[in-house]
Image 1 (cartoon, one colour):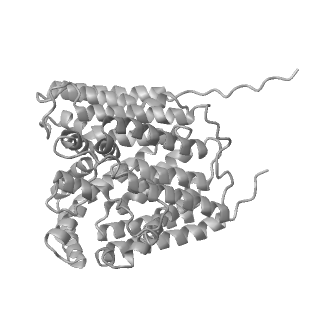
Image 2: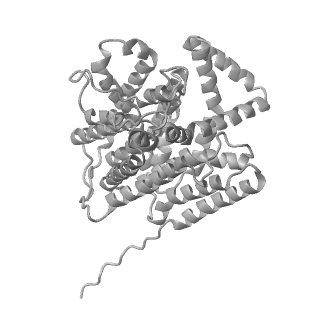
Image 3: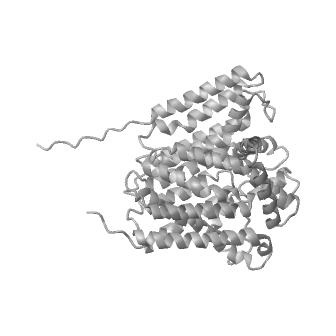
Length: 477
C-alpha cells in the first residue's frame, strides 16, 4: 500500500495582521486621547482602511507567494491614503481640510470601496475557476549574460534619462520628438531593469562584485536624480532592492528600510532647495547645485540645522505620499463644477502599442496636466498634479467607475502574480516582471491609468522578448 504524501503545513501570517492593526489601534487611541481636535470618523477611517489593506496577511503563508503583489499594493495604498490622517491624529494639529458631517466622507468611502473592489478582483484572479498552468518564464538566465545585459541596459537607460532631463524642453518642441518619444521613454525603463539584474545576482547568488556594481549604479542614479530634480530617479534603485530582497527571502528587511527612509528624509530638503534655486530663482543647474552644496557644508557645522533638515525632509516625504486630497477635490467638484470625463482620460490606453508616427493625433496620456487645468490647482498650467488612479476613475464614471475599474486593476495584478509566482519557481525574469509591476502600477498609483498601464504593458512585453533571446542557465538535475 502506497503511503500518501503528507501535505505541507502552512500557517497564514495572521499574527502580523493582528500586530500591525493592534499597534495602529493603540496609536489612534492615543491620538484621540491627547488631541482635542481629533475626529472619531477620521480615526475609524484609518483603522478600517488598515484592516482592509493588511487583510491578505491572513490569507497567505508567504510574503512572496500568490499574495505578494496584493500585500505590496495595499501597503503602499494605506501609506498613500491614511498616513497623513494618522500624523494629524498624533501631532495634535488641526486637519488641513474640514471634515464632512458624515462619519465617513464621500472621499473616504471612495477610498475604502477601492480597496474592497481591488481585493475582490485579486481574489477572482486567484480562483481555481481560472486555471493558468505552471506560469511563465520558468527558465533561468545564464549568469554571464545577466552581467553583460544588465550593465548595458543600465547604461542605455542612464543616457536616456540624462537626455530627457537636460534636453527635454528643446526636444519636446522638435518635430522628431513624436516618433522618438516612445522609444526614449521605453529606453529609460532599461535603467532600473539593468540595476535590478545586478541586484538579483547579489541577493540570489551572494555575489559581492555584483553588489558593488549595484551600489555604484545607486550612487550614479542618485546624483542624476538630484541634478535633474527627480527624486524618483534618486531613490528608485534602493527601494526596488528592498522589495526584491523581501520577495526573494520572504522577510522584511527592516534595518535597510529604516536606513533608506533616514537618507530620504535627510536629503529631501536639499531636493526642495535645489528646485527653488533652479526654477524659482532661474539659476542654471550648475549655479543652483553649487549654492545648495554650499548650504549643505554650512549645515554640517550644527546639529540643530541638520536635525531641522531631517525633520522638514520627513514632513515632505509624508506630504508627498498623501493622495487623499486629490480624491477629496475630485469628489467635491466633479459633477458640480467639473464635468465627468466619460472615459476620455482612459481611452488612450487602447493605443498603447501604436507608435505616434503611425498615429500623429494619438491622444495625450498626461492626465496630470489636464487635472491641474480643469480643477485650477496651480497657477502654472503645465504643472503636473497627480489625480490618483481611483480618483481618475471617479472623474470619468463616478462610483461605478471606481467599482469596475478597481476590480479590473485587482484582476490584472492578481493574474501577474499567478503567472510569475516565486513560490513555484524563482527566476530573474519572473522577479523582474513582479518588480516592474510594483514600480509602474503599485508605486505609481498616483499617476494616470493610461500612461502607467501603457508603460507597464510595454515593459512586460519587452521583458518577455528579452527572455526569448537570453541565454539560459543549464537545467538543474
